[in-house]
Image 1 (cartoon, one colour):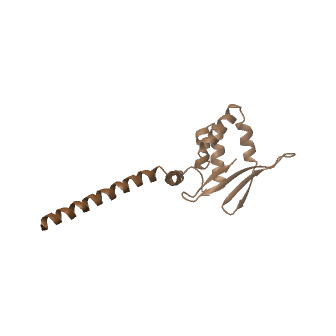
Image 2 (cartoon, helix red, strand yellow):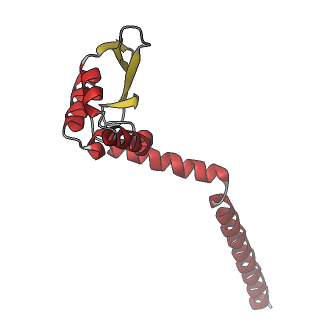
Image 3 (cartoon, helix red, strand yellow):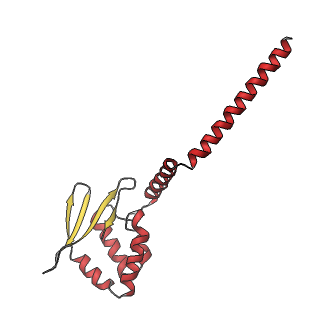
Length: 153
């Protein structure tokens, strides 16, 4: 009789453990498809991309000079890498359009005339043309790699 009781409780425990395991697995699969999980995974992907992004200089001026040098060589791929990770593809397309229109020389000339203003962790390179609104190139330091990246052009 004692063996029957042990078998019964052992079988019951096994069924409960398997049932809980199945519920956990179903819940985990459901969680992986949730918007919260997807946002978390995208955040982790972007954080890793920012941590691996070493294009740029240790000062805003150095990043600007690297960017201008890439433009002078017509290297759109390299020039786009001086932007923050989430804007690189968008800016690459924009730079390709400027290159195709033959306007790189104008852009380079304008960038070389900018003046730098530093505020907190943001660098503003401003170009003021007569009878025109000012243009700005904005940079921020990537805290994961300590390089300056272009955030706005």
